[in-house]
Image 1 (spheres, rainbow, N blue to C red):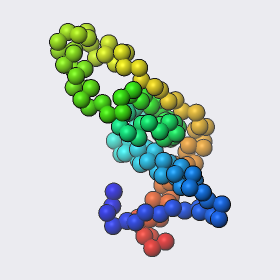
Image 2: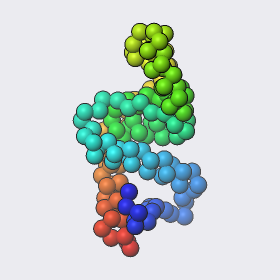
Image 3: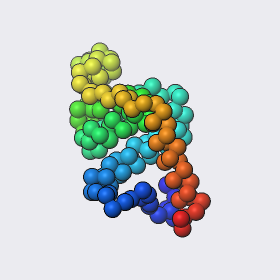
Length: 140
């Protein structure tokens, strides 16, 4: 989140393709999510409910689950802010008896960690090393 740090892509070879670059961008998003959860104390978080346009990308959702080591529940509605307000109104009006009832009606798609924990740990350590290189040696 430092505005003075420039972006970096490392490990590029002559064989690097557009697909590799897209995957690197998706991995960076998942790594940033893991960084944020680390900041707020990941041990208290048992699962993550997500929405937004990026949730349409199954690879990103799986990467998040793998790196976070928790289930990621994807809303069936990419943009669910207004739907959330409607659900709360439904509970208040008695349409649903509880938040649990309305969440059960949602039909979340769940991604569970599939990557081996040791591999996820290695990816996190590599990410942190590269971020440190940017922060403490921005000309590297």
